[in-house]
Length: 63
Image 1 (cartoon, rainbow, N blue to C red):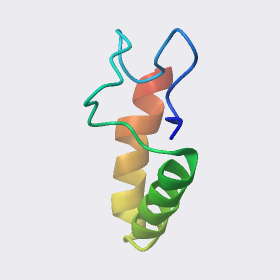
Image 2 (tube, helix red, strand yellow):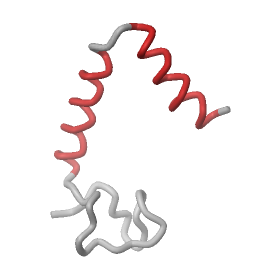
Image 3 (cartoon, rainbow, N blue to C red):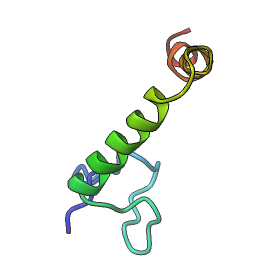
Image 4 (cartoon, helix red, strand yellow):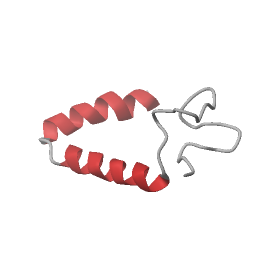
């Protein structure tokens, strides 16, 4: 199985590439399914909670 984070000589998740026993290792399909599930869960939350999540995670990266 090719991990979604495997970028050849690098890992897009960790600073050092250590695939053996990695807890983040999953296929592209697993990664996309988990992402869809998370988005559905977030979209079901009240608007105020979604705004707080957006402010904390989205704007913090760009601010």
